[in-house]
Image (tube, rainbow, N blue to C red; front, side, top):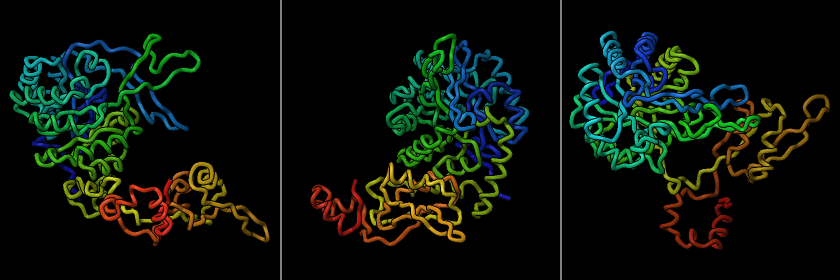
Length: 446
């Protein structure tokens, strides 16, 4: 049996699967039910200034029969009385002392407001820690809260310092993705003394327009606006930002753990987030779609995967893929792969041919081949000498493993662009020289 337990900046949890601060963690009933089904922790739906929520609140992107590929929301923080939330938080912690109960906080940018709610929450709930919501992109940001603070590094650092002055619990700063470089506010949070980071919060978006009524989605009495985008569609963005923060020197030097958020739906997603530096993960949209039950597959799947790779604890693989992240200038120009098509699996849809010839590098032909009793059929055939290894054909092919990208020997020297710039600067600065270099090394330039 593998050990899934984590110690997240002093916050203990039986596993890394947490509910994100969102509708699924809005009440004691919901959080206790989640813990009973196997979730290791929960970040309570954000408490703070009084709000009135609207309807409709959600808009979704559905694609080819798959529901909720992406979800947009204009819901604000908890609209329940703070006292009710604090009472239920304390009750959940009493009933589940070994699970992580984290209070998410957002108030106006005043020192006394932040310090008062922090002191009150830790006195009345015995929560395990705080998550400072510097990420909400709608509603609260118009009032100078949420991402309005998270987008200004000086505010991020200042409010974090205010909280650290009075908090007796670990403090997690939740970062907004609605910035040019998420590493900048991450550094500010570290300077402010944060014990941990979480990312990403939702992404600013407008979900769409109804082509019959011309109204925005979601529609709030005929009006609409920007909201927070989440769901599996944001996962690649979240992984990029997670890895950027995890590789940031100040974060590594301070040994700041990260809670990964954004598009997590399966145990495979969890493994990817942890391989890129997350110690815990937070889930929202997938739970809203499928319910708390999805954690059972996450636990079984991650446990089996760990066993198959010989990992005894999650710390054996957290961040294991980070060293593989590189700048483009350090990629090997000498690496070459070509597409190879398994004719036994080919269903003759010719999508690879169309994609290659219309939008890529015109290196796939349709050849007539005899298959049975003189009957001929068109098969896609790759001209490997012309193939640049872009992998578009493999991406559009509807049959698993029908098209494989195979590494082959090439005439290219094994050198990076940065090395080439240093050793042969005349090549990288002169198109004539580059064309000459391409001819002898088989490098394709576009």
